Length: 312
Image (cartoon, rainbow, N blue to C red; front, side):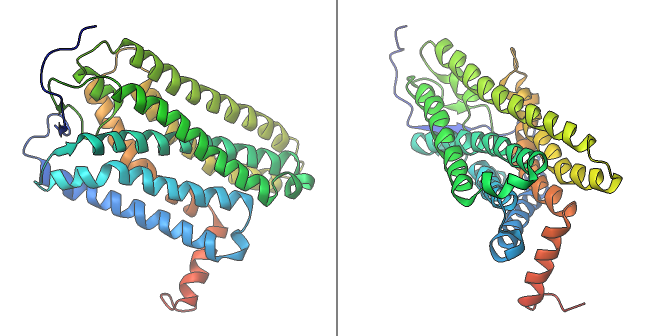
């Protein structure tokens, strides 16, 4: 398709959240505590995992990784959104827009891969308890973590390259609160059908494969748990896995709603994206700490040692 003869876009204007004109300060006051809680909660988990010897296990190693990614994922979009809600510039340079899209999909895909790895970890711990320390040895754990980084980088590089290989030489108004594929492709002055198909397939395939692997792991886990004779044993096993399952539902719901709809609803997509960027990363620390006595005990011990909480 012939490219339109007009000036090349060097910066974009983020139009923000639709139908919220005049409510910017209200939204800022509403969203800032969510972002602050996300950072505080995930830093707390990371500190507990790093400085408590009891939590130096594969399960908590991956939980620490998840906390890092949650902080990064939320920080890709939230600071810029909070700044323009305060009345600062809505402009974002072409380069920053590329970086925002890349890191959003990089960290988002890593989270999907990490949930899959965590499901495998729980499957190994419950189905093969006697061989768990051999199967999930430190070298394997590091290899799995690095693998999630590499796969996330490949996935995001493909999506970013396809999106920004297109020429942008017309409107520069992004009808969204950050640079994302569904909001940017309509601005391209060339045929976007290939980029749309590949991004839909890429996101859909990764989400589907990860979800099926998680489903397979938890099917085997459920069968193993039901074979446990004692009620207390079954309760503890289900308790260990329930937090992970809740987190998975919170992660996959938005992905399906935003990226895998045949005809996406922009307003619905924006609301779901806000939940995914602000609420999801904040919920993970709550899910894993409120339901996990080991993490709570580790945090209390660290606070006692640093003098922030007196010994009870």
